Image 1: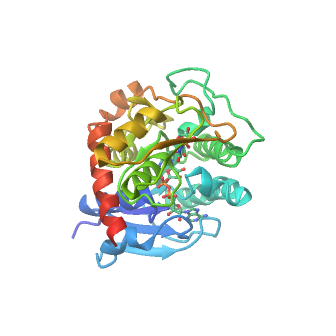
Image 2 (image 1 turned 135 degrees about the vertical axis):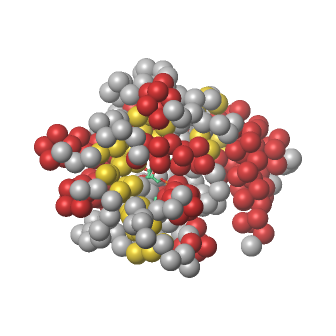
Length: 315
Ligand code: NAD
Ligand code: UDP
């Protein structure tokens, strides 16, 4: 019998990780999902637990990792501002020491390793839209720094392991991604607005709502992650992954209200410190190297996500 490629997904019980595990199993991989369940949920992977090619290990990436594998997707890290700011010291440790641990494992197993980096490495960007060549505009001392600088240092470590030890790395910079399996209390804008709209509560816009983001539906993102992992060996990235459609938070709120047919009113709350004013990826590199571009527009993605949350709120 042909041996299946064995894949470790750290953070596999989280929002993106759970979709990735499911897609990998469907594609014929063997999957080890490692997660400390800080923001992830067992419910996200419950339907996979009986699959003989799936294994769940409850473990922190700060601990030694002792598994044999051919590929590693390093997703372990809280991604929502409220969660990564809850214990900022732990967040920066998770980014950096987590990266160190998966890189050590990749070196020992001769595995490919993909780092889930982020558009946050561009900070509050002064170049718009953002190409990979832009070095960013990041506050090293603010409330977002544990995440932004943690992810920047992790990228550095990835490239140093590549240059110094020849580890086969893949670095992706993920822009705002949304979809089913986000937590209702995740705190990120898409889940907040949908849950508020479905409950008939006020929709909370931070600041004047003119700040922009570009939202990618999770299925598109997962497809890109797998393409990147299996791309030609000398293509390391960093590569931007996201949907270039750009929307203000006011536009997003109005879309969510319309699609949920909600009676919710928009209210304005203070803008958190260092909240980026604009964000939109240049994805020419992903198009060229991965033959990838998003296929699901915001309206369609929101409809699917609203359907998910309607079901969740009934339970
Ligand atoms: P998420 O919070 O749903 O998932 C993160 C997962 O990592 C959770 O299951 C959590 O329990 C786990 N985790 C956290 N700390 C851990 C630790 N120390 N040890 C083991 N597991 C740990 O968030 P997500 O949106 O699915 O994000 C996944 C990855 O993608 C993160 O690395 C994030 O930085 C990156 N990313 C996400 C987005 C986005 O818009 N969703 C954008 C940019 C980058
Ligand atoms: N935001 C908002 N209301 C909310 C949650 C977030 O207006 O209830 C804003 C937030 O200030 C930011 C944008 O939406 O400008 C995206 O926030 P999110 O936390 O989803 O992602 P990030 O800021 O990390 O891109």
